[in-house]
Image (cartoon, rainbow, N blue to C red; front, side, top):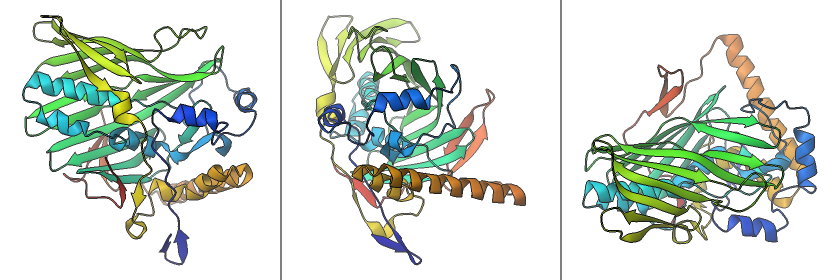
Length: 387
């Protein structure tokens, strides 16, 4: 525990979400979830109209994981047991590098336990972590609408990742669907290649079978080589039959000729294979158990943690959730939210405009928010997670 002025500062860190998360939640009685979860969910949404935008909907702490959404985004980059980013850079041909980027993109999808969600980040909140030679920095750059910016760099591999993400959750009666809007890019600077990709939608389903899943279409494109991948993520059927749950199907093609090079098939929580259209050869390109299982809690150097760090901002709430002290958790969360409202009113009364510390923001022609890092390289972080 470090001190900030006369105030003690805590940092509460938990394991990244991984393939083990659902089993642990089941064995531990829901881990962080309060009792009578499904009944509480119906009560919570009883006055919300179908089609409502839930972007600024404040959940009681009893529905929260002990981590911020910023940490969730960051974990999808640094929470791996295999250095997939190095594989992207070391590919000997544009096609091999593209396949590695495709595998890395699949690795950013993680299972989420039913009934709980991360905290909505406060304005200016940050999350800064190092993973081997990769340094990752996130900042909440807007609150209305909520927008998170991510910058990750690996000087050793000369790789840069930039994300600008806006989750748009909507209530549809029997489910909440979250569209994750915004641009995601990876640059392999040794090769002069930039890859763009989007994210599938996240479904939080209440009826008829409660559960969570990722669904929708993902496109990965390299502008310089013309290589393109179209993937379709599928979930359960409406009635809850397993069917193609957590499956991925798609292809890799040369966009200049529309010639399909590989078929892609598998499950993002198991293995994904590609089949060469020329010779029929099949090979595994992604093994989820190898990459995102048994992830460990990061370590921290308390003296160098920023006061805006997610694990510090939400430490009192997370600590109470982990003790299942629901009253204390709700009290601590209300305190944070009330402080943010007070700061907003103070800025508004003084005519002050809040600006991010680590990114610049601009509006695109389509009206969405774009984010650019202020610095070329992300510095090493006081929070460290090992391969």
